[in-house]
Length: 228
Image (cartoon, rainbow, N blue to C red):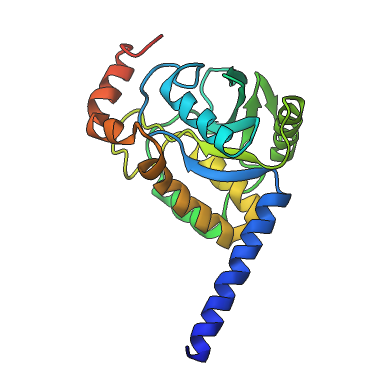
């Protein structure tokens, strides 16, 4: 092998070690996008498909909890049990209000600079937090109370209520970006964002169904036919 090849391999190894240390010492283990469209409303409820996917992953990792991040609506985003796994819902509150469109200028700004810690407010268990650090501390304490040891698997909900499910990364994505950027820095965030966007197509058993029936499921959800 050439000297350049050794250098590249060395850099990749260093980056891998950096990500590993960031994971074992940080609050979260980034997983990625959980779902593509809503299969039920609420879909993060015990016994529902996407809830089971998250809980099954946590079990495989030996985790007692899993965190799902959301775009805050009217819900309290309370935690609940899926079997013996605690599902912790963690939402960000956009000062611009609820939206389903994509602001491409904001996307570009986020890609370059990340998301400032003071951009959003947050909600967990009906409690609102002014800072990201306060919200993370609450989530960590809640997880610890439910037996969590080590980093908590982290998903963003990922469901898209209307529009293209491939272009729009879905519910909770900005908070996922904010959390991984905070934990791993720019390069680590780019890696976990890319990996996270691919994850459901590899690991979610419902992904093919969701993709094939996306527009129909969006219509059913928006018309209230998926309410439980």
